[in-house]
Length: 501
Image (cartoon, rainbow, N blue to C red; front, side, top):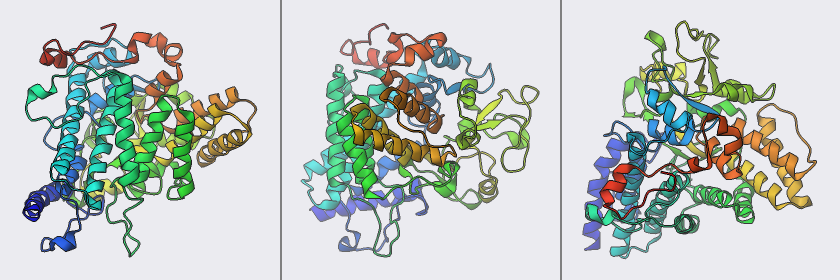
């Protein structure tokens, strides 16, 4: 019976894999259609699990809560590195809500963010429950379940940072009313995240390298992906010892390293490379075939016309971010594209304000001319969205070590910070005090992860948000966004709104 179920799942999975991933270059190699059960060597829920990776692309939806403008609003605009962008009149309400902290509990952006995160959570719960009901305990199935738990943890990581207390749905939903749950505490959500990532650390492989030395599944999760997110989860709760131990395991594994050129992290050449621990996969082939692209890059592209119609122009750098880099920092030119200046490929970007509505654009999503030629497209729909890279592990290790203190930790923190600075073309710094190193680490995080959705949450967890963002309207009430009114209404009194709202 199990073999029949397995074959059915495989038959259902193959077309889905073909539609979602198309090319093995950037994601999962497709198994031979004539393979036997023994040849496949896959878990009984692998088809369902592969679907979790494809869910991020949201090919059938207009917007997406993980990498589209609702994500930009809640994860990026609120920091002092990024702003709404586009033209002043385009989505003007977004600027008020997110740049100026005039939160609206009925705005559709937070509803999309909420719904898409819980949709993915429900998909992960289905994988986990299916494996449990079939009593699948083979190694391949344990890997599948660990992948599902990683995605559930990732979803809740976003939700708990954005909303605070949220419903804990850790079971399969069969009817909509199953979703009518009261809020769990923040501590309960973090505990679920910890448990899910622990399963990933235990059951995910170290890599997907085959006997020939090739990566069978570029972009597929490993134990180090789970370990890095587990470290970040601990960092957010100031569990310095726990975060440092996990980061040191990743560092000592020697499986990851900083790419020589910082800019490469945001080009096709750097995708799924030595610095990548997890990124959402996208791919557009020659002449647009296959097309497994999405709008993460398109929505942030230069908002112009003709050959400069590169996208919607959302999520642009703040002037303060442009001014924040040290002299000679290579990350400035890799992050900020200047209107009226050379684009780095020999073309001059049209001027601001005569032609373009913004002085600065996000260079990290700028379309490479070679890829425009290859795909036949101006707009960058082929770009992967990197959610976690090794630089983050290095700086998390430095921060945790500095907070723990002691001679060895001070030395290590200095070494790790200087690794990041060296790659950026900056000189080394020396340790003089914990406070001095804390300031240095904060500056490196700002420069390293600008426009990547980290800054607002860093400011909040450091306790710096009010002093830095207060002039834009931030108060302690803005730490958590109000729960979407649509979710409150759906729950019929079971779900209580956040304080202040």
